[in-house]
Length: 215
Image (tube, rainbow, N blue to C red):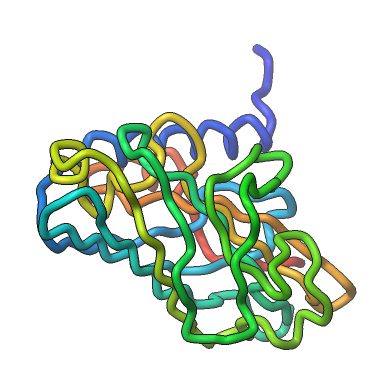
């Protein structure tokens, strides 16, 4: 029997989490959802993102994300950028503001290899990969809030909610970490936290995302 590798299971977990997020029912108005890491380049960075989707009519909606650095303090590391892709039914997404003035708009398209290009983002110095010293970023245990404006037809925006506002066909969120102990950096994909039944399934097969630690 061919033994499946750890990398295979990580990729499978990422795909499965993205798939179960797509199954959530959508509704207009005001809704919230939690996003957590589902795969990353280095398997170190960890965060929790509380996303709020607000739509009250017309051709624009608002996405607000409170992003918390959940890395073990002994590992250090700062969140220095975030990039998003909107749901495929939307026509656009743009950065509006952050609770930290150090985070600036990143000109589109936002390159976040190996996860492709994203529609909008915010980062230190207006950069996803660099942006100067990471010390101005989000330290472990700290949070910052980011606001984005989404555009689209009234029918498309009314059909979305916090779990479906980001891309359903590819990675919808990626968070950049830099300045970790020993110089580590990471790019971490976020997926909407699945319903309890899906969480139980992931836990049963041993691939539920957990806080990363380097041994």
